[in-house]
Image (cartoon, rainbow, N blue to C red; front, side, top):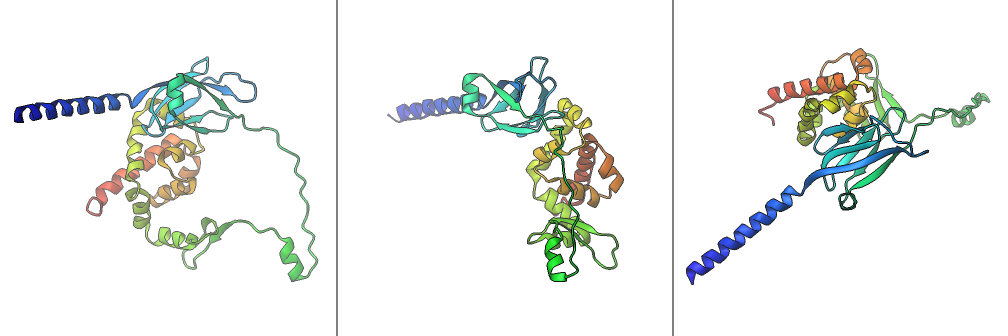
Length: 261
């Protein structure tokens, strides 16, 4: 009786392990799709497709088709010059039907006519104060430091973020790197993927970096600033150079902060 129960448990354990292994093997698969222009349904060739979860990339062929490894709930990032970048989540329906069509919207190149109206001041402070436009971006200046600091839109914590970045660059990098270990691990994957490197070499908008690393453009600029890169480099470098710069800075940060991490 004892031997029977032991054998029964062993069989159940083997079945469970087989089921788990089978499930894992089905997690990642090759998915297919076609990318088209949303306005006329023409296929788009050489569209960059990046899996933001596994950090691998591919290109659409001359027929607009692509194949990439992905799992359910992975997010694919589509980027093409002159078109609005989009993100598409992989669903069970996608796997079920085998191929779906991705429509990308072309960026408008026709600018609407803008009429600039001069501000007519009355000479009365109370009235003129209401006529002068107010902008959302704030620039903070601290006496003795020189220059100014763009803090973005006014919101709680904006000033403290500025002060922390200026006086505690190590703390700023810890907030950017130390609290995002999962995103930072994607740096090496991006550097090792030829398709992603080719994509970044021709881009200057930081969009792909922002999507993969889950950072805002101002955060990327501040990382480079706190890693002693010049303003000219930050302004003129392509996205591949920015990737290499952030990666180098992150590796130096890891060496210097092993004890803290």
